[in-house]
Length: 348
Image 1: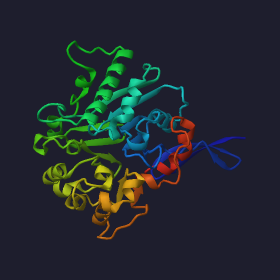
Image 2: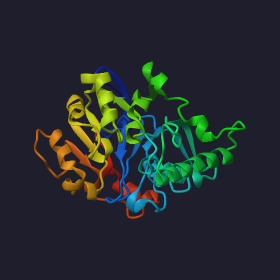
Image 3: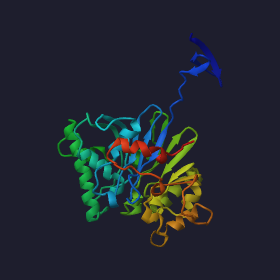
Image 4: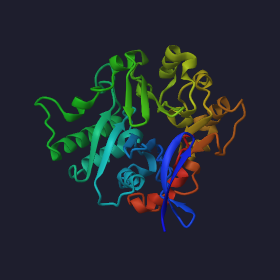
């Protein structure tokens, strides 16, 4: 015989069903999930997938270069794995943030958009990025970077076409989106983007004072989840880092930090000192992580570790190339489901 018991715990009333003395019907409250994902250890890239407690999907960058440059796209399979969907099920992505115009940060989005068959494949509700006017006298662009950006623009055009999105004559979907919701003016006004329990504090975008340094045009923002903060520096360089430090100073203090430029040749020591993060996120390929002479990554590790270098992961350093497992078939959700637990960032 079943009986209903009313329990009061920590000031919260819950109704549960008791069967034969056992408690059933209680479910663990959903919480934010964040994954720093990589399909293998050799590609230079940054890619985060976040699922809110309410089940909304958010992507930060999602790019790949090096070994995976010409590989089949992985990002939609990883998203379906996080969402608990099969390979042919449609996806809805609430927000896609792009930091700056390098392929190892936007390449996967470009691939996905160019192959999009319509909303029955996937839908992206909001794009957030602010790229400088590349290809102009103020922001010259080298040949390979320009070609990659054209592929991204082609992807946006494809997405608009197959989904019947109205694009006024004389412009492009890329131009409609670029800087539309995030730009210097909105950030200066204290812009925040709230998605369920998450609050994204927009902090910095490109400025002409940094010259044509593409890395320092990186969009900088901080994610607030509960009482924790995650600061995403992306590929921010020395000039952009100096500008960020001048504006925020000790207010840069954060619990987690995405290490700038994969941990090498990014912001300087004084920026990391101000951030003073307990956990460092290294989206770093093995050939950078292990080559301290060429990439000076050991110098960065010393900055955040009291002057002592190290080459291992641990509770204070999550290193993408040192994950124990990578997906055997990155373009299949089932393969990602097996490895996602090892790529999850504990935000508590």
